[in-house]
Structures are given as C-alpha cells and as structure tokens.
Image 1 (cartoon, rainbow, N blue to C red):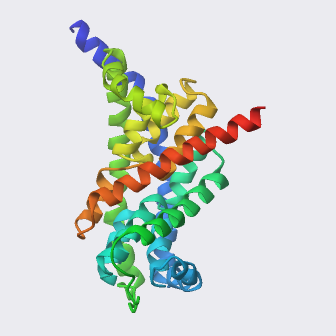
Image 2 (spheres, rainbow, N blue to C red):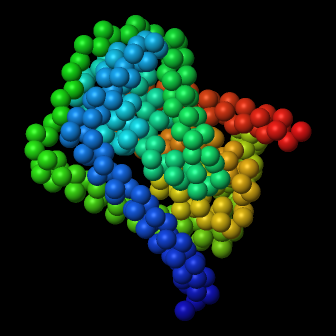
Image 3 (cartoon, helix red, strand yellow):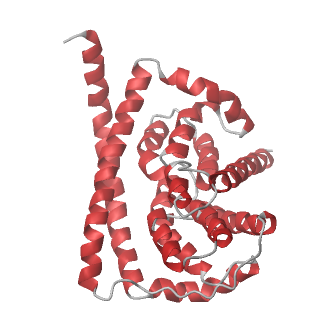
Length: 307
C-alpha cells in the first residue's frame, strides 16, 4: 500500500467512529420527532395551534393562514413548508416573506439540540430564531413592493386514514435517515482528509477577511462554510468534533451558533423555494445581513458582561 493510500485509510479509520456516534444521536432525535409531528398533523393539532397564533401574523401584514406555514416549519422541515405553500397557493409576495421566516425558524427540536450541544443556550436559540423571523418578516413586508393579500385560504389535511399517512411517512423518513448516515460520515471523512493533506487551510484562508467582517473567529471558517452550504443537521458532525477537540472555545462556538441560527443551508433550502417562483437574493441576503448584526450584538453583550 502506498503512503498516500495509508494516509487515506487512516483518515477514514479516524473519522468513522465519530461519524457513527453522531449519526446514531441524530437518528434517535429525528425519528421520534418526525413521528410525533406526523401525529400532530393527522389529528389537526397543527391547524389548531395556527388558529391561535394567526393574529400575530396579521400584525406584520401577513394573512392569518401564514401561521399554519410557520408552525409547520417549526415542527418539521423545509420540504413540508413547500408542500403547504403549494397547497395554499399564496401570492408570491406573501410566500416569499413566509419562506424567509421559515428559513430562519424551522426544525426547532432537532436543530436546537445541535446548537445546545455546541455551547449555546437552547432557550436563547429558540427565542433568537423565532423573534428574528418576525423582525425580518416585518422588515420585508415594509420594503418589498406590492401589498398583502386578503388571506382567504383553507388548508386541508391530505390524509384521511392514519395507516395511509404512516405508509407515506415511512419511505420519507427512511430516505432522511439514510441521508444522515451517508452525509455525516462522508463530511467527517472529507474534513479529516482535507486536514491531513493540508488542503483545508487553502480552502478557508480566503474566508478569513469575511469572518472578521461578520464578527466570527477565523477558526470557524470551515464550520461556517459547512453550515451555510449543507445546513446544521448534516453539518453537526463536524461542529461537534471541533467542539469536543477544543479547536473552538465555547464562546467562539456560541458566536458561530448565533450566526448559523439565522443563516444556514443557503443552497438547498432556498432552491426549494425558487421552484415556487420566489427570488433567490431575497431568500438569502436578508438572513445573511441579519445574522451578521446578531453576532455583533452578541459580541457587544459579551464585552459588557466581561467588564
């Protein structure tokens, strides 16, 4: 075996245990949460919850039915949000604002657990994402051209039989769990290879000036890149490894979490909404700018607390 092959095999052996550990943790989290949401949706509890929260959305110029979209987002994922938006057929303006809000506030249970495990307060992360989504939504409502719709839409649960709902859910969750195992392990192996052969520093070096601008430590460049491309769930393996190895201090992890809580998965998730006719720049830029502002506010808070 050549020296190159030996180093490659070593990277795989080193990355595999952590990848397996993180995959199992994510599966244990994802499976029950997903099934619980299935039951909430089937028994109409999501619609009931949305009914009581709809007045809040009307305050920022969105129809009451928008509550159903965000509630769905909080408990599920972007794929479910796209399905609901397709069913409601909201005007592009309303749909775009809701899409941005959902890109900030989605998958609360799973993603908050990841943020908590990498040095951030779970309650703080929940409040940060929820409040930020409404602030960004309100700002977009003020700045985007056009006027709000009347919101006369009705959402109907598409599954009349629980067995049918479960049979529809099983292949979907199966694909999700398979993606978790493959992507988490692949990411850790790739990251270990990049480190072993000295490639990582060349990939992250151009990002250093941007890290300073965003108020983030330069050591977080790779994690920032992972979080903004494939998201928190699949990128959690690398984040957890960096945290456990002490390559990022808790305060540095917390700063990165404040950014990623608002701005993550800037490729796949926005592209799903682009298929509905929404503007890609509007889906990406407001979240990025608001995330930068949040990090600097957090740094100011840390400064005054340390005095």
